[in-house]
Amino acid sequence: MNKLTIALLITLVLANIATVTLFWVGRMNDRPGRPPGNMEGRPKDFINKELKFDGDQQYQYEKLVLEHRKISGAYLDSISQAKDHFFNLLKDTITTQQDKLTAATAISAANERLDLLTFDHFQKIRALCTPLQKGKFDEIIHQVVMMMSRPKPPADRAGIDKGNQEKK
Image (cartoon, rainbow, N blue to C red; front, side):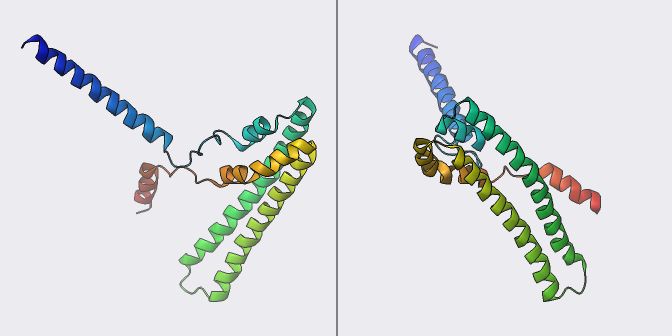
């Protein structure tokens, strides 16, 4: 092969490597559940960064976060149990409309308790803020809520399929 062919081949290989690299980097940035733009990270860190809490505010904020996590964990367990009960109704050969409504209402009530807890949590955080920080808080709160409610990564299909195979 002559030198021109070798140079062209090397150029094509390098261009291919660059294209594949850019493709994979782009896919990593578009993963489901990844927050857009400056919403990277956990809501707690995002709030702290955006509001620029001082030392005392950070201490109080950390206490609020720990309290919220502890209580919300119990509420999430309650929601999970209510949903388990709801979908266990499928096993019954005779499930009345009232049974379904009662179970669905229990899920709604558990979600309502969690939503009210979270609302109160944000009210307490806002109360920590200086007047200038309150304005910033009001600007970012919808982003924070979006971060908290973004979809979780999909479950591992192999684990799901394996679980279904074991039940057969």
